[in-house]
Image (cartoon, rainbow, N blue to C red):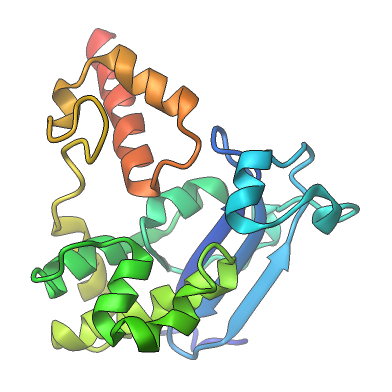
Length: 231
């Protein structure tokens, strides 16, 4: 759908992937933040879908047989990408040159009284469990997740008293919010990620396929920081 060329554009995005490590997109969904226009498509990553990942999103090799692979060059890139742990989806589609707005970070600022910030839990705390049940039942479907993210984004904007089309403000708040810093579970639960042994970080990345995108990004950043420090 065409946009006003003068106004900044933003897409709410969610992806489903083929594997836990080195993930490639097999389903991508977007919603134009200014208009609500929805788009979704399936893709073939060129390799088998992990059985563990299939249990999460339900997409099988048969579902994507014969389909083309995702090509960033054919993707209509916006000025901003909005997502729940958006750096994960941004990385999955090939790291286009856009500005990122993370609804996890926005929600932590807008709703500090909430106890959990997974997308489904955010929707439950926003709407109440009964009203949220229909939406959260669609979790791990890219379009269903994108719809939840869009709702959460607008709720954050309303709570923080700025227009949802003011993407610059959303981006500023998102990037000033504090990212995940401590291990949420496991042997080193509660420890700062930058103090957890690097061997354990690598073990987690290699052996736990369903890490949340925010934790996955934090662990990857820890490894990148360690490599940079050793150079």
